[in-house]
Image (tube, rainbow, N blue to C red; front, side, top):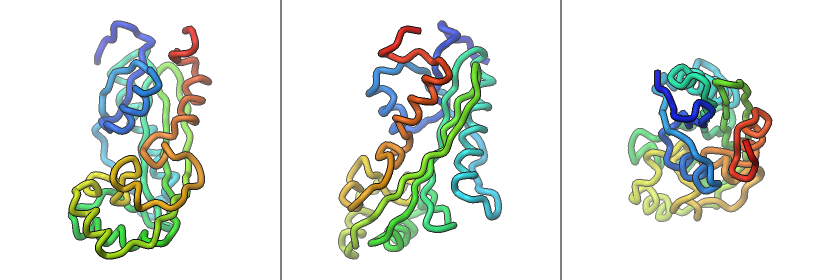
Length: 198
């Protein structure tokens, strides 16, 4: 159990530097405390159910460490039809994922959960269409190393932006946190925001 100087503080239950950067850009002040949970999908678990389950579990796990605080958690996955595409285990799997995504539209799902002083959650879906990629483009991108720690083997906020030809929905959802919808969740819970007095 951890005691914060301000018991109404916001805690981000994620070690993701992308989520941290997105919240920091908006002037939000928060503590980072990642949740260590089993992220294995259940057999036949749909993408939206999977990310919501993990986000809620992360938020509740970390909320136990910070009594009285708001705890925000998120989980993102890439889905091609009913198949979930997690982080590739090696360059060969990254190359295979990118080849399959080439020239097609897939879905990115993020579950966002708030726990502690209040509990609420949501799932956001964004459609992402890839350009038709050449083998050379895929090989070059895999060689950068960027795909290896990204769900679906790409990062739209980095070098992987050249892969994408179109987006339907929240762009920041593809990065790992749908900002507009997350801010609405925080607002409804009464979390103090930089532009609004507590």
